[in-house]
Image (cartoon, rainbow, N blue to C red):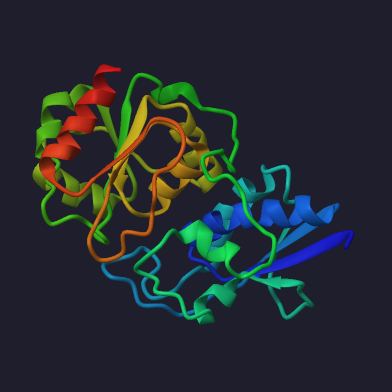
Length: 258
């Protein structure tokens, strides 16, 4: 095959986690041109509040995601899916009989193909770092997939060195525990978000797009894991995860002092 057209309906984190498989497909089969089709407005049910309501991917999120995908050397074109012929449907993982609360999300895609694998300790998203937050820790926390045994209030001690990243509603909920932290950043699109993450001191937060980007770029990172769907597995580079408060604080302080 000289060209490859793939489709994915989201969410954004699932798309990012499909990219190691796309890289392996391109390398294994000597593909010269990859077109990535984004399918919009597919319904879903999130475990908590989400900015997209009950959709996996809408036009706004697709617009925010497109520049990040195009910045990767293994993707040549990103278009909205409108029924055109495709070679690979990454949405196949949804009907593969997998337990979505288990295993490792990027490895779900490996299972759909014969002879496809990649070292997940290596980065698969590469961007030019934006160093405006190089002396700061970026922290994010969304309402989904939190550990019931972790609080962030100890971060008040480090308020001058922390910037919260996310959307305003998440920041408001975060400040209920961390009123001393007043710095907030909301990216205009996901390439900018990836660049500030790549340039920060380290990232700490729970499962979601922010952690997925940190994992994809292998920046220093700390994951607040969960018991509902612990399917984000830190691999490669300085990476840690914790389910309980003692471990979360331990690794956070260790990264602060490194």
